[in-house]
Length: 207
Ligand SMILES: N[C@@H](CC(=O)c1ccccc1NC=O)C(=O)O
Ligand SMILES: [Zn+2]
Ligand SMILES: [Zn+2]
View 1: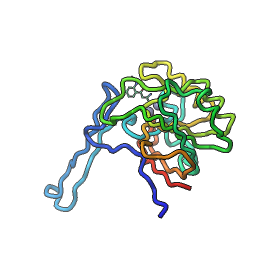
View 2 (view 1 turned 45 degrees about the horizontal axis):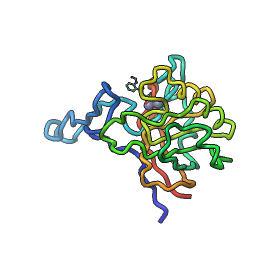
View 3 (view 1 turned 90 degrees about the vertical axis):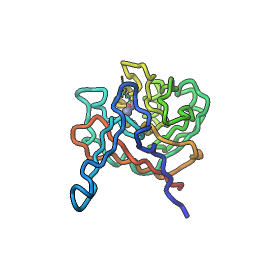
View 4 (view 1 turned 45 degrees about the vertical axis):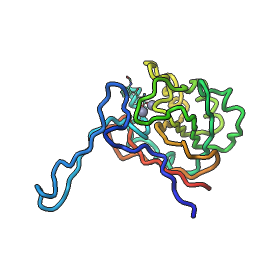
């Protein structure tokens, strides 16, 4: 059977968060014993924990919020490529692949081994790649990394260039078991009206 594969990080109190950011917390705030009928839970988390999408408002005060994003980009045909042992993600690396007709591109780097520890460094996406991918027709990029920019970047050039070129950002995927190829993807953001991003449940199914 052609089943859906979960490519999302599990959310529990051990999940890695950006240094200094809010730890993930789920608690039953009103128990069945107290309410007489139901357990009612509450979550507290940073938007940028686990598998999530960024809205442009994350890095641009005038940028789009989650509710303004086109949901069609987060569901549909996607290509998975495998680029292990790379220092950065640039035109050099991707020009070796035939990406004609790819709208959603997911990059497996295998860099982030222990999802319960925040990585020390990651292969960043070279800002120049954004225009190259846009020309090919890419509208969504997803990575198995917590960011597309160097972790200490304040400029966030790759985030800005991707957005400027109409490419949407999906971060924190788990692609360890996913072979390169063509899939259907679903990674829909929540309808958060004011938010700078959203957690997603990302899933793939082989075409
Ligand atoms: N740019 C990152 C997030 C990020 O930079 C960040 C997330 C939470 C707390 C601090 C952060 N960055 C800078 O200190 C991202 O796109 O997920
Ligand atoms: Zn983010
Ligand atoms: Zn980001």
